[in-house]
Amino acid sequence: MRTLYQLPALLLTALCHTIVVYYMSQHKHSKSKFIIYGCIYIFCFVGIGGYGYVTGGISGILSYVGIVICTLLFSCIASQDCFAKKCFLFITYFCLFSVLDNMLKLMIKLFVPQISEVAGYYATIVLRCVALLLLLVLYRKYAIVILHSLTESGKRWWNLALIALLFYLLQAVVSVLNARNAIPDVYLLLLFTAISFVMCAVYGIVFSNISYMKKDAEAALIRQNAEYLSGCLSVLQNAEEANRRLRHDMRHHIEAIAEYAKTDDTSAILAYIGEYRIAISEAAVKQYSLNRTVNSILSAYAGKAEENGIDFTARCNVPKELKVREIDIIALLGNLLENALYGCLVSGKEKLCIEMYVRLQNSSLVILCNNTCSDYLKLSGGLPTGKSIGISSILSVCRKYDGNLDYKIENGICSAYAVLNL
Image 1 (cartoon, rainbow, N blue to C red):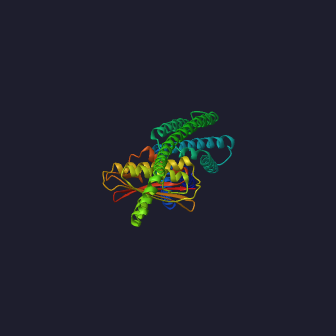
Image 2 (image 1 turned 90 degrees about the vertical axis):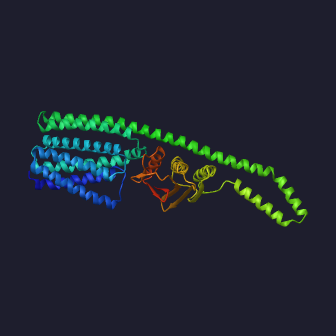
């Protein structure tokens, strides 16, 4: 079969890979930029694959390796997931790709022996693409939510990537046996089928493990919520205590005003009332938002900022009800403000400030948190280097709502910009 007939098949395969990469993981670039990278990848894929078909032999094997590396680089460039997770997804996909390719070739060879070489080749390509896209639909429907809800724990993802690699190596050995005609086709088909069933069973365990990881992450968020709510309760208790003192002292205030009134000292009365008004306003809990959860978090951290001599500003424009789970909004705002508070304290600067802006724009919840930061704070890929569990938690919530998180540093101010699509 001439290379001329194989080029459209290479193009179709590269297009299938591009679609899978786009929908399999979190996007790192805009759609237009991804299309540019995708076109470059497709050109490289077809070029390397075509060269391998023309030369054959060792060059053909090297071209296959080149295609694998090219696809891995493309998936890494396109995705903003941690590298370990990228490897897990890529190896899993390539393993499925190889198993489907070998099984379809064997099935066509065994059950449709009269079909021509070109027709069989294209039947394999088309059926393989259809099967992969159907698996992608199932992945988007059932698995992607679980994967995106996890924090970026590299160690766990490397363990999962190792499992995927073992299956890939197993099917690669069977593929070599198939190429050398070392085993009859019927037994090869049964062997690939067995590998597929075992792979499904193991991946069932893997996703069960991922589900437990998700529960662990949610348990951590619940513990965080308890801490934040405890802080909110402390603020409210302090405010209530201040109000109780003011009410207790009310009789003394009235008597003082009465004494000023007896001497017609109007200016003294007005000055005393002004001081009393200031005392009442300082004791009151400031209302930042109509949403109770958002207001509680902002109030709690306003109190913490005041205790540490940090100027705190918050502007919030959200409705009473939000289409965000309380556990998620607390994790998001709480971690943003906790990191901002910590950033101020370790900055070593005299003027410390935290500014929080929260608004609902169309169907997106937009959050901007500015804080004084250290001159040594560095960013990598739009996130602080050596990101903490708190930032991983924020990122997990953003991804859960198909949003994004981005950090910037300018003039000694660190700005965290988070968007949730509701």
